[in-house]
Length: 259
Image 1 (cartoon, rainbow, N blue to C red):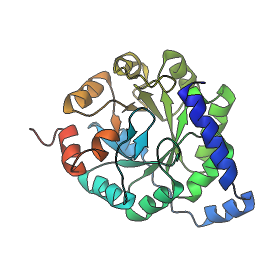
Image 2: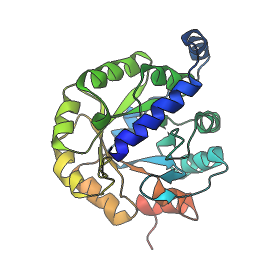
Image 3: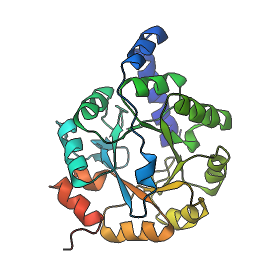
Image 4: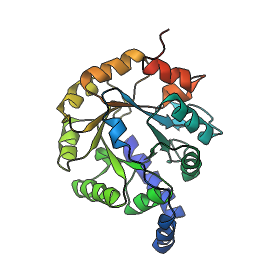
């Protein structure tokens, strides 16, 4: 079993344990925070930042304790992040919907629910908890699931970050005419990282779409490389949560602070 398949198996088990009646979830949707649109900022000429609240990962293990996700997210916002990504997968990433709730109350910028979305229920759940964007991993979904979930997210008012890491996945992603495509330099089946994915895939994404470089970004040079490849945004987690000062780390990554 690949790492991705193992994670999804756990996600389905955890979802079964917390699933509420749809009527109850629909009630929560009625009082959900308003949707904040992330797309304009992700299409700016300057590089945009999706800053991640991330405690651990399958590849690196524990990264940071993060006892105050709301405080961290607020620091990200103050330092100029355009979107905050919140991990809600518990087993491998140490996240939760409680983190999403806390962050939503603390910041005004859009929030990405970062999880393995493999069931329609999760989309209603994401919106009920205040998510503005959801992650759709092409490697984890069938062609029909990708299309159906993309349209479901749109019906609920959310954007979708469509994540790819191969040419084939990019072709599948482009078939649904997305607004945001993320190129993950980490292969989720093996956890190997190869920045060449940025150079190979990002230039093939139409310039009308937001193009996000994901994984393996921890230095200003790596940000510049992603920009040269055509990225309009970067998604960074590990480098920020491991830094002593997220604001300084963000300044460095965005070229506002030279060492």
